[in-house]
Length: 56
Image (cartoon, rainbow, N blue to C red; front, side, top):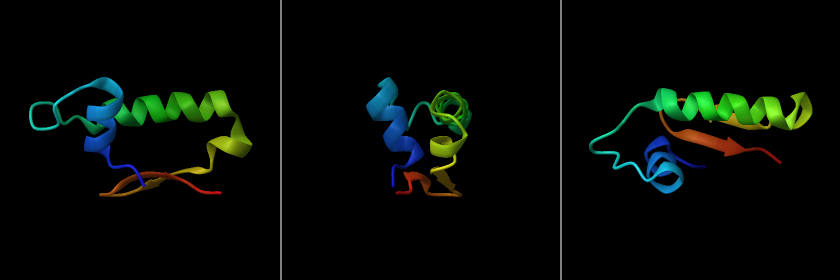
């Protein structure tokens, strides 16, 4: 499971204390799901209040 603050900091280099816009992550995850296609894209699961995980 990857939290939204973790993704903001690790992927984009944002300081979660200064920049905490979950919309940034949501948009990028949406684009990633489209690129992966329906079969793999639906394996990226949003855990409300926690973050995202990839179900195997």
